[in-house]
Image (cartoon, rainbow over all chains, first blue to last red; front, side, top):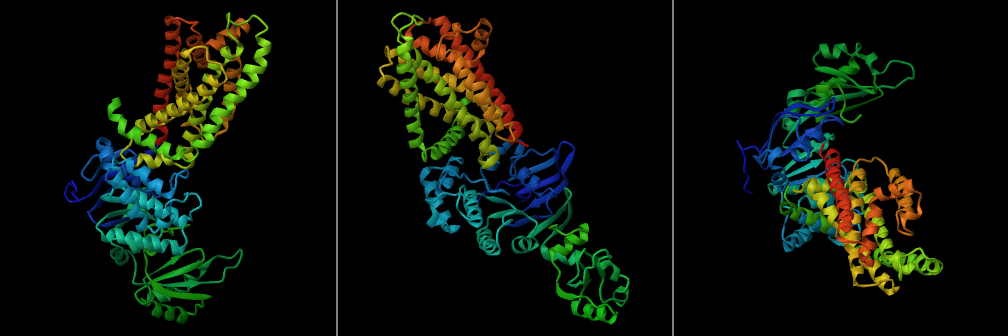
Length: 322
Length: 261
């Protein structure tokens, strides 16, 4: 694909900062994205993910720091960079006055592509996102998942080296999400570099080779999903739910009673959420047995594998979607 | 930012707007013909019969011939404002299509140039439709009536550019209705379209002379009837160009502020 890269990185940021007035959206982050990898920014709303994506997309000038995309400086070579990117924004911005196919044809012209090339690609891409039968239909009545797929097709019209996806499946139903993940996985297999933001840990686990966890404009941790879980969480988690009584303290009142579980090494630590306790442990069933042995009887319990959500909780003390 | 360097981007944005326009050009054409026909029939002919009994107009000019080239320019003003208000605000705020365009190699000047190109297309084609109606009504006194087209385009741009600049700053569309009620309609009624502004009290004559519409109307009518010389024509052209240039610079500024953050 002829990348002009410096030191092998397609995207390289050092001390990248974005401020809006007094508000610092991105507070000095370092990022390297290698060709062909699938890279994610995981974090809650307001973590600075979209601001970062807009800077990488060469549409929002950085306030400070160094940024190179495809080896180029966005402040100087914005149009040349954008010519080689595909962008799927957080909110669909399709042209509702045009048909499905026209959205692709019109967009292709912005990249100065020959008409025949645009037509061929539009046909292929509609096939790829399973919208061929809707080619002549208006965009407005399409479902959320279809609009999202059309936005992805549009982002691919210039055969980009890097595709930027800002929360690609937010607001979609589970089935539509899986269709979308499948298409993105196919792109990845073709060697397209994907950079995405998400606040869904399952999406990050499905799609990302490597990711950074962002919180309040900073990077809290980076690595592969497996590495992050290994570094910041335990193998398993035992979740305990207790009855909530109005006006009484929540699950935190059981923490002292559970001290023996920690003392015996059946769990490494306890995380308190408003509605439940999380016991971080190598062996969830053993931890649950220790809970019962300590004389604590939760309303319900669940033993599961650790996820990125646990990593995030460990790093920030908050859940991802709240 | 030289004009040739802008051209491909601006043209692709123009092509985008045209692709959308293709879906409703028929209804647009019908109103481009029907509205002038209604005005010329009601005002030009019916009212004109009464006016022609008086002695207010230059010798040998009927009210219909007096009115038509001015009405054509006033219609151009409405078309230009219509294409520069809701569509610009919508592109920025509602369907965010401007944001989508800015993720391509295009920049803000390309969008603005492409937009103004499309406004020019709409103003010129609507004015041409008006011209056909005008000729059909027998309101053309000479081939000079063709000069109403450049006058309409210039007037259109004098309005389109500041309205575009304003549209890029708005959070809701209420100001457009206010502009229509408190600026455009009074201008339409009192800036020389229907009667010479010398009928107004002196103070209001000076206000009328400040409006771009009066200059557009005076230019269009003067050229068509052969009643103005080169100097006066250039004065009107210059004033309209001033609005168009300042409006373009303002629009460039408000577009950048709104779209490059």
